[in-house]
Length: 540
Image 1: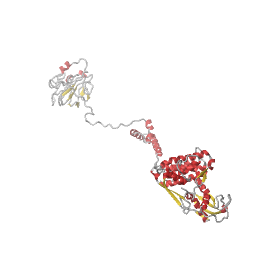
Image 2: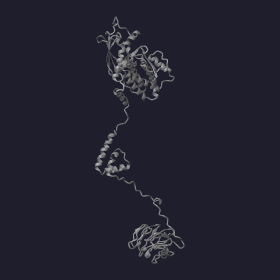
Image 3: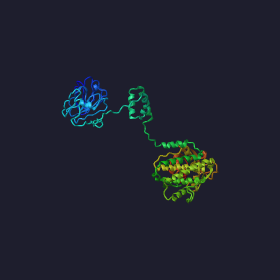
Image 4: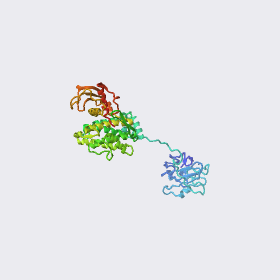
């Protein structure tokens, strides 16, 4: 090259190179007369046939400036490149020279102990750290073999910080962004999708309006109120289901109350824990003269219901839960005591299974038997009831003892449905004359004072009007002179008014006749006898 000004190098990176005849600059390697850049290596069609051997040489005597050490020359077949280093000089030989070029030709043109000589005999000047060379530099010194420079170090291995490019934004089409609006409103998008959608909403008005509508709709799907269920919800649902659910097999009307009350008690038992099955419960009743009680547990109460319901089961031909147990007299109290004494351990929650299965069998059997089976007698030891009245009696006792259990475990429990409560009150009103006659035979009630002879069966006699208010209410005329007499409004001598639930508590022995809140009018002695007869209907 003619008139090349020169370059300075540090390490293996060249700062600048200016050449004549339009040479271009590329990362430490320049060519003249239209030479192409190849990143400091060689150029394929360089100007004037520049070539190098063991140290690059340039045509037309290109001259290089001093380096800071021994210079490494890089041979090329189209351009001249010189790199200065601080160590020993190494020449890199390239094997992609044009045809006709040999080592001898290159050796004649590159020689000299202190530097490389160009084609026109120009000599490179020496560097501060050793012999230097320009673009035509040769070997680093006499008697030394050329050395290949080490490969360039990557950015990752150089210890320099990597460039922080940051996350690239997600670029999506308009139709894709529009389809993501629903997921965005539900907060179901990924962070990248969310950023893309929100950026799009700032530029697209229709999508922003649709996103606002979707967000409002999502707000309606997630109300702000608490998700905790109402504690009384279960009870209400059961009541509605029991009142409206049509049974698969029609249950007789007189057995419907027992079916409903056993289902309500079973739901209560399902909600209590293991420890609550041993909670103390006191059974209360009126023995004819004074209140009586018996202490047991929740499991003991279910065992009591199991044994007494067994009287109805035996009358229907079903298995007796006391089979194989000496029960003594067939009274409800005797059967319960026999069951408790036969158990080696106090009853546990395992008694729920037999009681539940027996109650289902009773309802299923009377349903298949039809309404005609209601006249079947059921013995209770000292007395008997028809199957119709016996099922009402068992429904009444199931409700009463379920209320005892609910009090023991602190559980809310409501009275029966009004139509069921009415049938229970009607049963008590119908057996009141029998209870009153038994008390007179036992000397616990005064005989009639105003009659000199017995009232014939079916004839009207003195009567007491029993008025029940509230749930299951109604009016009944109770004959006072004989169970076979009929009540008559014309012979009414007294009037008693009671709340429906209060009257049932009186008949269950949970309220004494003196404590019963009753509105009274008329014959005080007749009123007292009737209230005592109502309390005497109770038993354990």
